[in-house]
Length: 267
Image (cartoon, rainbow, N blue to C red):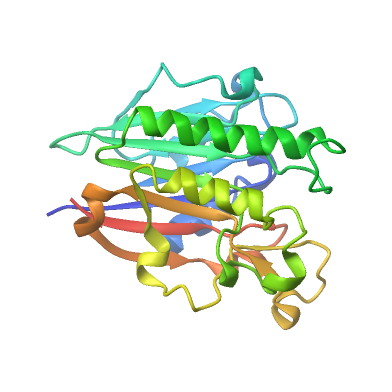
């Protein structure tokens, strides 16, 4: 068997925080890094970054100032070209690749789901409606294209379980944990995936990947949410080896408000 380690991280600007990727490599030694909120158009993406990290194969899909996703890999990548234009917005929230693992290729999806604004009402807040529509489209897509040898990672911007937030009761009407969001995300996941991190961490344990910049002492208050996820198709359950949440990355100098999530498969 060969171990394959994949990390996902909402980096909140790849040009601003590119040096922190070396810390990620030192701590987790991933073979593949998936980034969200790269916030850079493709022609300005730092071309030397992959080589500097030992991840020379790079795919990216970006735009100026917002959104953006990228995959950096030690192994060769082939872009999946026929991905949907989610909600017909062409807003650089998804990229997919086939990974040359030496046997059957592994398909990797990297998502940045819309945050959804502040008001959990479709009529008052079109951003919330966009988020719900995005999730529904993704669910329908994978219902029609059942995943096989597939990983899905990214900032899905939803904490789906009660213990994925610091207070289930207080956040039920807060965007990222409202019932329409959590029900929608869970419906998407059940179209052929399992929650790989919760495979290792029981549902009754608190688990967070994001702490607001507004929290000056985020460790003391620990008002976190699990917004960053790794799913695998059900045929890969037996390949799950280990996971890591790099919580200390929240204290990296000029760090993101998200921390990297890491999964290792034995293939």
